[in-house]
Image (cartoon, rainbow over all chains, first blue to last red; front, side, top):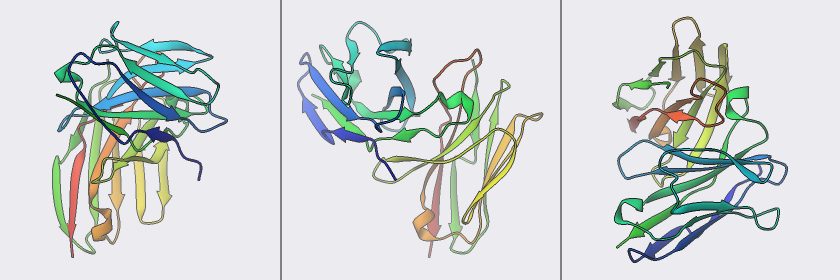
Length: 116
Length: 110
């Protein structure tokens, strides 16, 4: 089965530093997502991306966050100046159509971000 | 906003037992997703259903749209089924995102 690939699997950074989390979605998928899960809490939506632009974002996704699809295959999440509370597992996901339309969502294995 | 409630939060079973995990949501939806989160953290989509019942191997998912309720059943449970099972639904209004429940942590003992 095709896979969503995320790198790195673990990232440790100092507070205030910039981090870039990378994802390679499934090649024929059209919708791309970032979700995060703080330890012990439920998975939360950050942002969705379609047709080379952000289609929806949550309150969490403030000016410190940005997403890009620079080369048609990679999908990146950048956090400009990390805070302690950004420590979480970040999941990339992709699908061929929106999850509201009976389409399965494919998740990457996640990047565990630790901000010290 | 769609609120998702799962029960139970934790479930311990003996190998071979029949398992039921429940999910209720507050707003009518077009599709409900059941996901499995492995102990290492990875998330796998198990089912996505909009009506009736779906079966895959030992897993069965049902949904009652009128009652806004879904169940995930595992027959002949096995220790490898130990994981967190999560229900997720789209919020109202044609949003592209999913709203996740807190999950049910299942432990199956040999």
